[in-house]
Length: 257
Image (cartoon, rainbow, N blue to C red; front, side, top):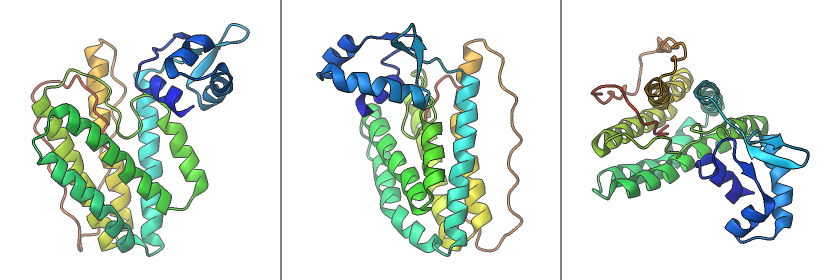
């Protein structure tokens, strides 16, 4: 089921496409039995819809649905981060994040081809976000975030559009990774409000890119949310990462949260 889910989330199986067990079995080199079992399970996750009496098709998602899932995931991850700090485990969380921060720093300074950087950054980003959710030790929260991540362009590591120049992509990734460092600093300082707000702010990079893709397609943009106010607490506050400059309207949505 994991491989089939990835084909849907990466867009290999297109929205509205009718799924045939025999075709999927040949593509994945499996028997039809696991395919037959996976299809209704993916329908329960919201990735497929019924097509006819016994068939399934890939569900179509709108940009508005992706934005809604993205915002909800940011709120849930912020809640997870806040709970970790309030339980007195912020310093341990910061220590656990440090190897991933180091990996990201090394990768973004490596000069590797952009395709390699995007792929490896995505894997690092998935591990970083998953680690925070896992350390919250809240099964319900974990399940709710997993539900958000089945909406296309919402989960960590997914590259959504393909029209942004390599230089702009690396700037976005560096900006997002500076936010990762700020999140770790807030954990280390024990600032529960700050770490929660940083997770919410962290999602705006992806949100702005999704807005750009929506506008490029000629659709009306969703209403913009107000910026989240910063906490009034000033002691030991981690520095706010500066945003990359943007020339013109973005047309690629890069999941760099």
